[in-house]
Length: 382
Image 1: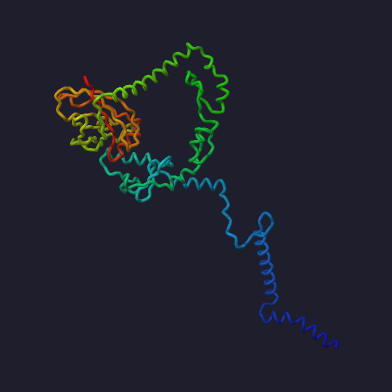
Image 2 (image 1 turned 30 degrees about the vertical axis):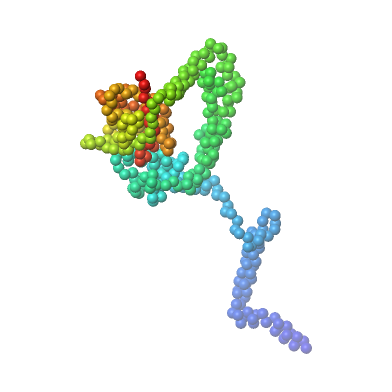
């Protein structure tokens, strides 16, 4: 019995080794299997821990992936720099502040540079082209890129006063209404206080300002200057109102079209088709920078115009006239009343400046296909 029990124990003990031998694993293979099993178990435990949220509950494995981790400050700065280089204007290499135009190949231009390119091409009698790919550009060929405009409005920009960063869409409101370092003026500036300083010092200054305690005699000089400015504005409107009371008044929409002189060095000028007002035939002409040789090389640009009577008259025709913006244009023109006595010998006025605000408005007019304005003529009865 004892020998049979010993044989049975030996058989049971030898069974694992025989099975291992039959699989060809041996002692080393068993150790490797044990290591792999422990490594797999550790991986499962790590995955289980990773799937647990902050409350300790296990996350759903079928749930959608979580959002990406926000970029570090340095990486976000690099991304913004790359966006600056991608979204900047191809002409001035700066981020657009308003409208963004693109050529047919997708190159971006800010509104100011786009208008300037069209104006320069008009002055040089050339076809405007994209500075990157040289494809033709015009108001009809190019379109606005609203996606870029929205992307640029969300990029951060430094406040010029407090140097903090804000999205461009809210930067103007911050600088004009919210920034504590924005430059402000004393509320007593109308009576001569010259103080300017940061907004957070305004209340302290107004408490100590000496101008509210000035005598009436000291304030009279300041009030006189204000009255003179008010009188000039009032005189202009009173003159217009008095002209509107005349018996013979005529007005029409005029369209200035671009032409070139026949000189060896051609110059740009504008002229309207003949039109009839007050039973007379008229023509308007305009020129750039008083027919300067190369107005495209000048940063300051102006337009001047003259009114020409084409009809023959039996007696002198005394008229006042003024140009205003047309019904479909957004050009800013300040009304200025001109006066001339027309006759067969003096049928042209002198060139007078078109009362536009600055060179930017002049470039807008030059970039347009035609210039559309409204002309008023008032005949003065003797």
